[in-house]
Image 1 (cartoon, rainbow, N blue to C red):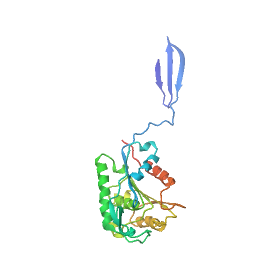
Image 2: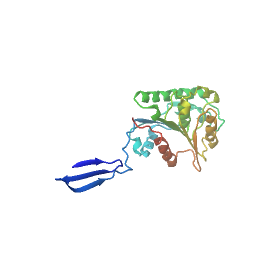
Image 3: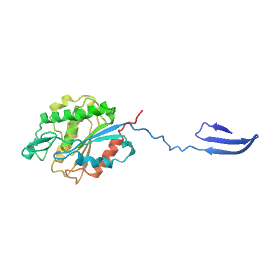
Image 4: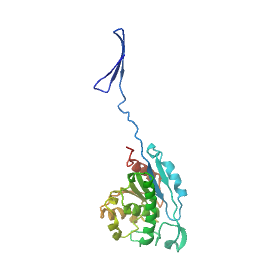
Length: 252
């Protein structure tokens, strides 16, 4: 029996007996077959909105069913209890202080409490990198107040991350803070999704975000959702899954 490998992707297996050829089998490898890549560890940090909690948002991870997320570590932290100005000083889960509701493009900012919250997010990211996760496979996502914190956290982080996804958020800092954004941070992809019927964080507040970032040399993909109020739709989450999946790095 002899095995002959031709220049084309065809294998001929010829069976001979006493010098007489009995039969020849032709094998044509499937050209569409691809050896599955081994996905490296990835990390998705989800930051909830004002008054919410991390555990209440955990069902979101069950919607990410693509095999690329098999090695994904999810984290849903809860904000500490703080007095919130827009709610007359009531104490509730809050990442930083919000001065007024609805939030507009010109709403006042409280950068001091914001920066404190950012430092805590950075500690979570640092811990994950120390555990062996490539920064390019780290994604920070957040809704409303969590979206505003997401934006600030990825922009002030000194390394390029896999991406930051903002849902119904706003720019919670002034232009002076842009000077603190490193060249590496400016390369972190930003996805911004906002409902056009949002009455809590007005659509104008979200719409003002990308032009603000572009002036600082930061690219941002903005998606508007007609009819969507201050909430997250299944359509947004399906797109988020695709958006992250296309950016995940496979292991070498």
